Length: 102
Image 1 (spheres, rainbow, N blue to C red):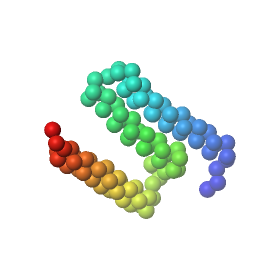
Image 2: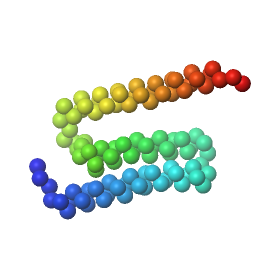
Image 3: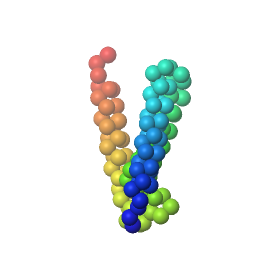
C-alpha cells in the first residue's frame, strides 16, 4: 500500500496542526485563567483524549474503520499498560501525600 508522498505530507501537516491546536487550547485556558478549575480539568482531559486519537490517526496510521484484530489487541494492551502506569502513579503519589507531615 504505497501512498503518494504529497498525500502523506498533507496528512502529517493536518495532524501537526490539530496536535498544536489541541495543545495550545488547554494551555491558553489555564494560562489566562479563562475557566473554573473543574471546567479546565474537563477541557484538558478532553483535549488529551482527542490528542491521542489524532496521534494514532495521523502519525501512527491507524485507520479506525479498517482496524485488524491484531491491532485491536495491541491497542487494548497499550491501554491496559497506560492505565496501570498512570493509575499506579496516582496511587503512589496519593499514598505519599497522605503520609506527609502537616
